[in-house]
Length: 382
Image 1: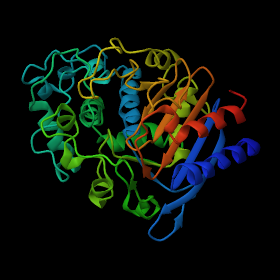
Image 2: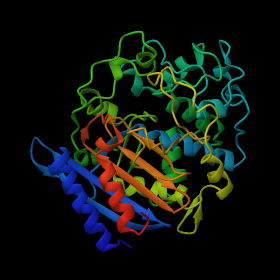
Image 3: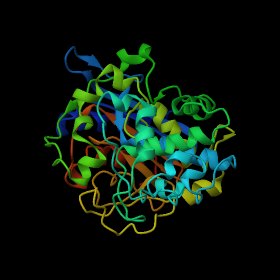
Image 4: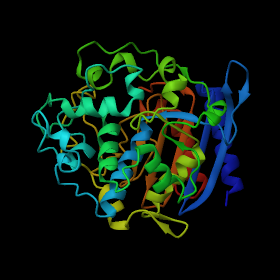
């Protein structure tokens, strides 16, 4: 049940984010110990026509989407359909080509496959073709040593998603698997990895305020996230892209649905009496990945603080994750500032969605810092 006093305090912080920090449209939801306690929004969904944000407005969340394929892998492990430490080629034989036969499912979860790059021919058209991309990934050879942390900016979703498809007895496509195994059983209607065209009018219009240039061609970053498909409105506002399952970066969610998803993890793997994952499996997913101090050559040669379960972890010095406080908090940030997290120690799950894509340089610049602190204070968790 929504905590009205807390909700009012958080709504006021959303208004501050708009008036003081330049946000345009913002939506936030939070669960505490399995109950929806915050559900509020403010601002404009589409600056062209003045359409306002409401509780059903959908937002691009970019890499926050990565939490879904990670969780789907854990679902398959929970069912005994895969082993994290078996080679990916055990389940997807074609993946074993070109020296990849030893790369395990856990390696993919932990971004240490040595192959962060996307396949030749990656374009706006081909990222909408699941089979084209997965076939290209299967043919590729690693470009870095096995075990070297190297962020799989886009390939993460296709690699994990194809493992899920191959281990699914029904061989459902990944978007269908998510709908039938996670969204429908847990009443999460707006966790879209490929939208139904009927919901397109509900999507907020993106505004790119990152002021960034394309990555240098040939750089590891550009090989991991090619400039032709970089995360900008001109690409991700296209109907074909919105309707495709691009599992690492293509999620279009409401904060309410996203927070409900994170609530499953914050609540030890169950929600409303239904269990998705065991508490032990969630606890294991909240442990730090090995070699978190090793610089990641894709991620601007900076270390990435990731968990063993394929999620990020709170890091106070990283602007993208700083709002998600908690020693065992797992989270995933998205391009432009989106963020979702689960804190298993407090039972708090939060989703922050917005349509102004920004690039905070420090933790204090993140528009969510004040909002996140307000949530914790209003709920007595500060």
